[in-house]
Image (cartoon, rainbow, N blue to C red; front, side, top):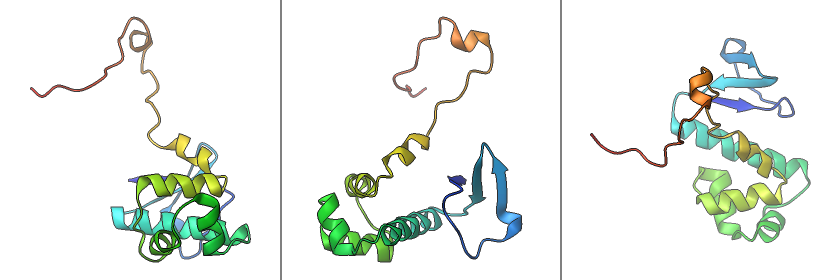
Length: 123
């Protein structure tokens, strides 16, 4: 699994061999969902601190309870709705646009007269 990080963020403790350049982004490989969640919580916390906000201030600004925000920063546990609210409060909502991007067409047939699947049926 690869997670992309913009150049605006600074990371400590990442080995040079884990870094990968591509599309003007810095990416590093994470081996588990727990690591992805922990890193996401750490990045949100750093952004909060960079903006000079306390946990209580961010909780009020995002309309997320202080306890939920604290639990997220400490243990990485949060609902998707609360995560999105915090991202908006930190002016980071555009970061979600990079999640699950559509696949670029491989050939012209992929572009012409191909209906977009709405669901997948079991066989």
